[in-house]
Length: 106
Image 1 (tube, one colour):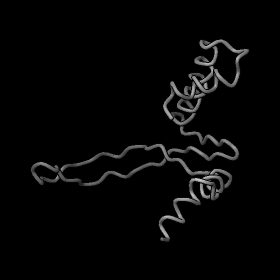
Image 2 (tube, one colour; image 1 turned 90 degrees about the horizontal axis):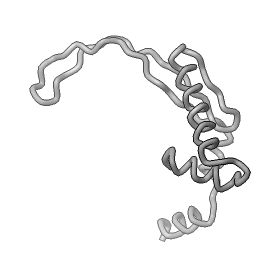
Image 3 (cartoon, helix red, strand yellow; image 1 turned 180 degrees about the horizontal axis):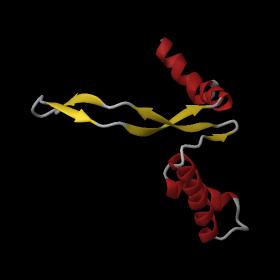
């Protein structure tokens, strides 16, 4: 699902809100998550998961074209850990998944 698809779905589910209000809400949520991660904070969305920032140490990499060693500096990377409820919903057998499993089993 893309950002515009998310906005369209939220607008459809909330007809009392104007499209531009839904766009502002989605932008605000994403901006706040981004700002928190930039500060090094952890963002937890209960039932969905947690976003955090992990530090990567500097290392020696390789230029894929020439094979030459290249210094890669330290960096901070966003990390997402799915929550228990999200993992359970993804792994819950639904009609489509049951059909796929039955087909795969022959």
